[in-house]
Length: 249
Ligand code: SF4
Image: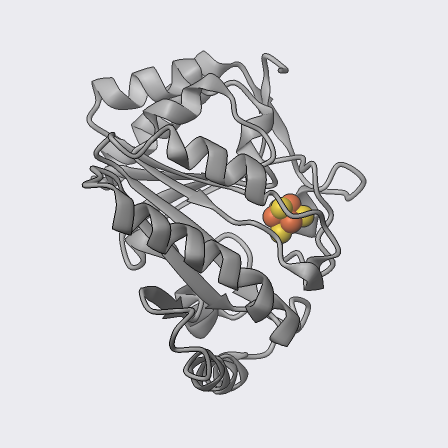
């Protein structure tokens, strides 16, 4: 792991647009660098071979900066995203957040498991379905979650859906979530989220109508598999309805 943490953007207060904390007022911290290259990635500007404004921070400096922003804006939730935040060491940053009662969400594709993940309040794994062109991280994600079922925190599996193959792919995750529910009086709040894939991440025009139309289609398609998706949560990306593809909001 690198000591310094390269950050593309820190913005907010805004709202969490997806997953178990959708609608929560929060500050976003987006790091540079990702171990994947998804075909439909909406954050390609974080990839190492793309130009973007990056500031590399010592963890102490980054922690001070974010905490001050939280204090100034009276915001008590931080979302660590990317890119892949698991490429870096957030141990010190998280310790500082705890001291100021700031809760933290992490969003990652589930290929890397640094020790500090265990102290995250809400963990969102986003495995990549076939439309992404990336490998599945099912084994790693499910093995990790099995070690966490007695801990009282939120863990979500969130899969962007672009086509029927992606829905098929998601079925095994639905079965996994159901199997955990059935077998254990668990403490974790484990949920599966299917979200509407954004098929045009470059347009600067409003994408509200398309997102809502795709959302309706997704609802209808999931209803064709009632036995497989009994406890699933289906959401559009809230921020795309409000801001489209605009960055830093
Ligand atoms: Fe983009 Fe996320 Fe895929 Fe990385 S894992 S390429 S940030 S969508």
